[in-house]
Length: 166
Image 1: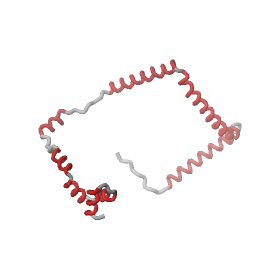
Image 2: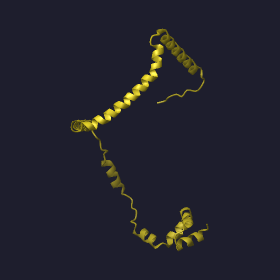
Image 3: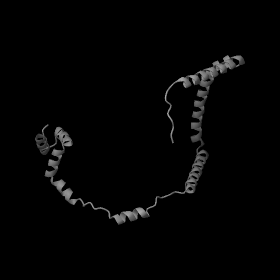
Image 4: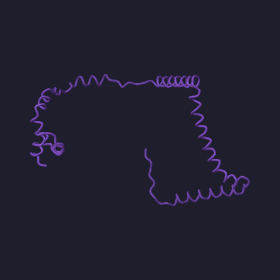
């Protein structure tokens, strides 16, 4: 779209294509802003920018100190919050034990399900290894051999290792 056509369409009313052109074209934006009476009023009402005198800026920076919080105060605040949390938990348990018991019951049921699954998975190794110490010893030797092979493989790989500098 040409600049003149976009300006004409914007003056006559809303036009999506002309607004898109205006968003991309700085020249059209400047021309339309010059013709807008509100823009001139806003520019005239804007206060002039003044520099802060160097003496004031230096004085403020010289007197300003970063606020520091004592670690004792932080520790006291943490202890206070711990006491408040403990009191609220005790009041909840005292006044509404069902509120606490229900989630604990749900958690207990979930843990029972997980325990059943884990026991089912471990049943096979228990049956295979329980009364056979030779099998357990052979498995341990096999694990040690495999770990040793991995160490040898790692050492034989020729690549640049990064040096950590501090």
